[in-house]
Amino acid sequence: MSIDIAELVRVRAQHPEAIAEAAARRTRRPLLNTSGRLMIVAADHPARGALGVGDRKFAMANRADLLERLVLALGRPGVDGVLATADILDDLLLLGALDGKVVMGSMNRGGLQGASFELDDRFTGHRPEDIERLGFDAGKLLLRICYDDPGSLTTLESTARAIDAMAERRLPVFVEPFISRRDDDGKLGNDLSAEAVTKSIAIASGLGGSSAYTWLKVPVTENPDDMAEVMATSTLPAVLLGGEVGGDQDGAYEKWRGALQLPTVRGLVVGRSLLYPADGDVAAAVDTAVGLL
Image 1 (cartoon, rainbow, N blue to C red):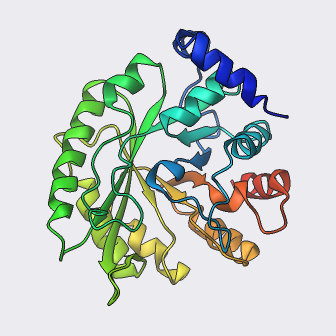
Image 2 (image 1 turned 180 degrees about the vertical axis):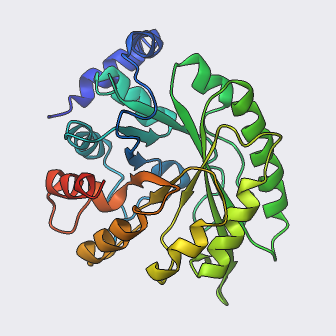
């Protein structure tokens, strides 16, 4: 599908109400279909200033190209929906690409990549009331916890309140927790050891006044053999996040395949590695990921 950016801009400029109208017309579906599995394509990275894929620093900066990749991915059999920020979801609504799909709004994008305040991850994206108003199906939030950074406490508290607000509306919220650390140069990184991922799951599972609508969005640990013990930390349903896989796409698939057999793991939420695969074949990458489910 070729994206007519001029037409998108014309509608946005002259008929901004068309976005809400498209949301109201959208055909909805249950979060889980009969298989009980989820395959979600993620595209909320740009709003945090994270535009790079591999050695391409601005791979996600071309919006027409990104939208074309998203529309292609959403059209593949077995893809359940998309996770993105308001600007991208608004474009996809206008393109008619969200009918019959699960739509997840990305809630906190304030922890900009590389910023001194990266761990004070404010809720600058979708609010629970926005997700409810637009008839979207779920929200997602990022929870990075650094024991040496007081900004993490602000994020923890605001995360708990967001979980409460989503539960009040009976809307699922996917919490993506990490134990994070800064290196000697101040660069932030996520600890994917079994110990760190276990702690992050335990902390995230206990946030808010109810866990009834809380899901987890978790990485595969450094040693995939640790995943069974790690995922035993919580009874909350979980999806695996893809993250960057570098050049070893096949290795990533194998890690996901093993973890998907665990009883709490219900699916995949994958972004850059499917939208920008090393060989450029988006359809093949998406189809392979769907096959793992």
